[in-house]
Length: 201
Image 1 (cartoon, rainbow, N blue to C red):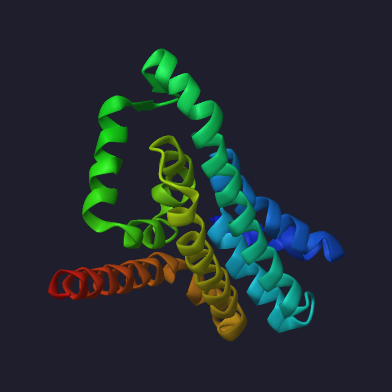
Image 2 (cartoon, one colour):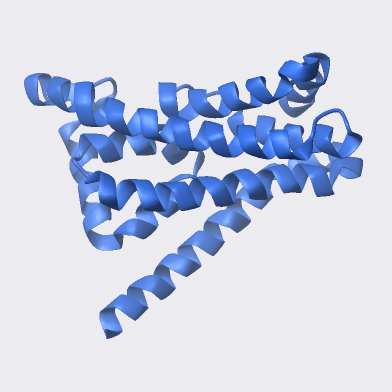
């Protein structure tokens, strides 16, 4: 059985100089268009191709980070503009209803900026997070700086993961879920430390 990660790697390898654009498109489509596409897998596969010399590492990094930043920005403004207007008129937008939006507002009130940081590392939140943050009316000054930090860390980390472990690709892609959970636990630990520091101020 061919793993999805193998298919993505094959697509990128066969695309030649267009590979960085495909990585960018996969990543952008997740949060920018709210599509469940293998953006994270494409980023790791881009790192694997960089290790083989088929793709400059700088191009893979730029595609991953650029796709994440622009995709998150597009998703945020989609939620902040058309999303909020439709939500105000209809009481829902796509699959989002008032209950889900209120829940996100409660999370933002409790966790603050770590919620924006952590969203990039949760698959569902990576796709819908920026849109929902815009829908709730989270100010741009609270969203964009922390979003950019998360996107840069995510893009570099997953590209380098593929680059460093390219020789173990067959063993690597089944472990991507474990790597994701390690990143999530690190984010949660950092968020807990930040909250503790804020309460002691």
